[in-house]
Image 1 (cartoon, rainbow over the protein chains, first blue to last red):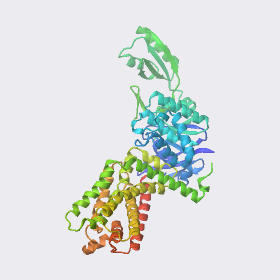
Image 2: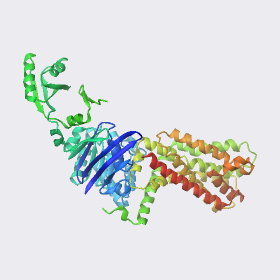
Image 3: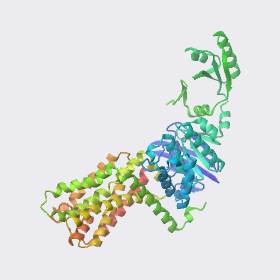
Image 4: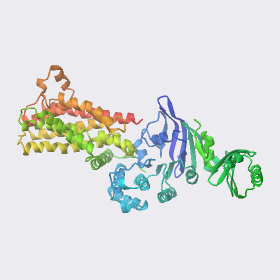
Length: 318
Length: 255
């Protein structure tokens, strides 16, 4: 059975079309990444899939339950971890967990057992009787995830799970998600961290301006833009003009500086390597390292969403 | 996994009620002692009452029914207009909207917290009437029913206004006060309806507070404008209208 089945989903806000006839499905047990720039339609899609918003037309089902007409049954099998750590600051961690369990109709004995278990997994048990307003950002994020798991969901919506977190929280969350995937839980992940999606997802969908631009496994998507390859090179010395000089080398389409390295985009890596070596020789530079890189998922994302690289950062064209 | 569709209605109802109760308990823990709730739910009606009562020559004990009425009006309708915009702002309201519960349970749970808060607060003037002024209660059961219905009616009114999709508490409170404040003047709390001009008497008929206050007056004095039965029926109608409208608006504003 499909965990999620989206068919001809359209959502309009007045004259604005937020989702334009999108279709996709997520298999049970799959980790599915949903990527897109801000305003692309990610949040609208999640709000429809979780039954908060209604589509203008089209259908979405969760394990066969239509989210619009069989909302409660569809929601019963899902856990939702929203982008904001939406916990109750004036309640303790324990009270937050119990409240979440009550909303999801978890039985009294089970809810206390599950709460204890999850608070221990997320390293919050020692603080379970403390009000949440004293928690750090990472602790609140871990509590949000714990609350999303209190009903043992078959499908977990994870919205930016590790955005801006400390290393400890990041590691705990990734470990827990890995364990959930191993146990067969379906994960629907939205993230701005494209590398996270690359590592964690079986498939990713890239949404842009309300349209699905591509859906495939990360490696398959990378193959579609083999023309975007790059050379990463570092020299023993750097100067202010180096980036512009490298950008002017033959066959280099674009160049970026990242730390002590330069990334040169090209369709012909071997030609650029020769040019880089010649440049180093001419300027009496020593090449410390040089690596040929294939296209990254970020490159795919940028290509499909029409964003532009500028000074190492990514900017929307519009 | 068994489908919820195949559940018995009694089990489904029990789940919905326990979820509504969980929402009400959450509100009690978080909001009952918030300063803006205390100001608008307790201090505001008290000062309003004092402002009007001081100029009257009536014995203080006779003012107790009016004090109970406006306490019920203000305290019952003060919780949700504060809690829901705050929860929208911190996104915890999305947690309620995406839970496997019906919108009716959500709305009822929210109203329940205002209802219980109001009943608790209204016991204060009741106790003052009994202990300090020895104000006699002619019909206690009618008083209990009147307090319950009035509290629930205005709790649902508060939930209805909180449906307005804003994260700003002040915005909801301003809209609510444009309705609440006129109600105390046209519902027979300070000025008996029979002494009002004809137009005032007609407007009084569309105020839910008229019927709650009428019942409370009956419970204390044995005199009323309408029969208690009619007061009960009209208040139940108001509760249903507020509840159904609130449900519709929460659904509409989240589309």
